[in-house]
Length: 180
Image 1 (cartoon, rainbow, N blue to C red):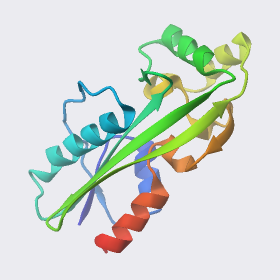
Image 2: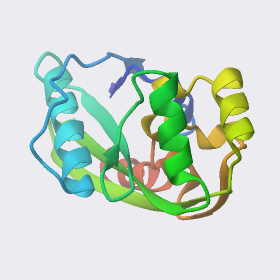
Image 3: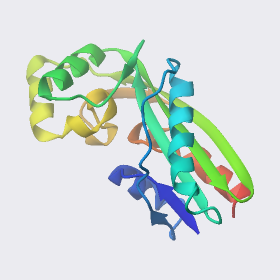
């Protein structure tokens, strides 16, 4: 059986495009890290989340993911609306990167990888930022935005679904090749 170790509703929906039969177990893993490089952060945290669930389900395939928005530093989920506005102003009119790390643990072994997508924000006015914060919930999203909201993003280079929170193309290829 495949287990998605995640509490993210967006990852749950995206994972349905990879497998129609899977269960969900939200991991209870410590998400603090001393890593500073975004690729290392996401792979370390994805592996930690997967291991947390795999320990009690060692005969299953456990998939986990962690995503960060990076603009010279990691932009986490904002604590409040003021922090969300500050983050959106920072990204406005600029390129930044979104990294997702994935870990797959199974009796066959382990696969850990990351995907990076470059994202260019539209130039946003203060009013547009205020409207975005009112209409969409930026507090549950790294970098204070969701690409699926179709408001802030002008261009992307890479996997769109990676920015949503799961690098679907690469993950699906690895699962088909090694775990099907």
